Image 1 (cartoon, rainbow, N blue to C red):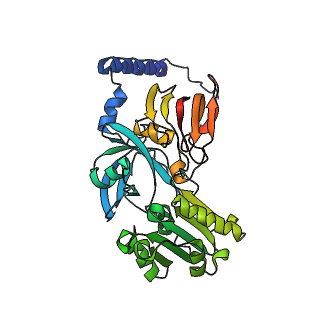
Image 2: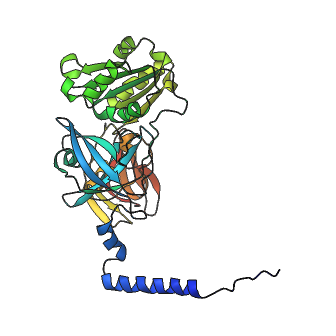
Image 3: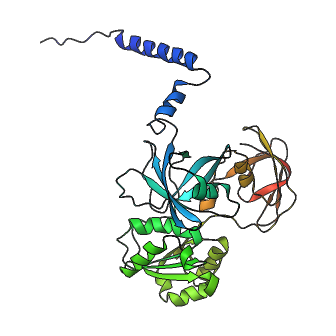
Length: 366
């Protein structure tokens, strides 16, 4: 039997050529927009588009915190409990990006996820999300990231120490890891009403899933590491995850190190601690073409985002060195130590924009 080999035809190349001509015509007709821009209007969450989400609901948690329900685009990938997502949203005509922990149960059947946001004084994005944003608003998304997660081998005993909005990544873990059988949660908030997820946490405690210790700082003051050790006598036997203000985390790190158990403590920082300030200056982003005036106490990362410059970072959620960029010329000051780093024209000295402020005019390669 003789096999018949199909002869190549010009059909497929012809179809491709026709498609390309149609796209070129469509681009000419829709200029200055592209056909994809019109598709964005019709189906902004479609596969292949820039990753976006649509806010479906804003659910109050406390007087200054709310859970934001987001339907992500088709290309969204499943997160790990404890991770965070960077969200870009337009506030007063300026697109700003912030990172928030994902707090939802992975078992949701509606395809949505949630972040829980606490409005901070002067925080443009947090106040907008908690008090002003409306369902239907489109936001820009990055894929979830972060390493503040439980290991594959779950600990036999776990301790979580949180304060304020530091409860958010831990809530993501508690909702998704019912296999944890020996859990202590020590949480600080000004009052009982200020405890984000307060009712749910107390229900978990009533069901015996966790042992909950609430510290209401308006009446009982701040917890120190020694008090936590007294409340949790078997602390040295527990793997500990802590999230909250820098001062609290540094206190815990010192105590755990002194006890010889530093390797059992995992921390998540929201913001660096600013200790030293100085004169500011003009910051120029050489690739972006933006120049802005930044104060000597303002991290370059914050100043840039306030001006609508999209910056690389994971700093607010403890992912260090994601914000590092080359300093091509000028000087910056480390807000933690006061040390000034300088660069001659053409240099590429790497600096952390989350802890560096302008110390005069400086050019950042971004």
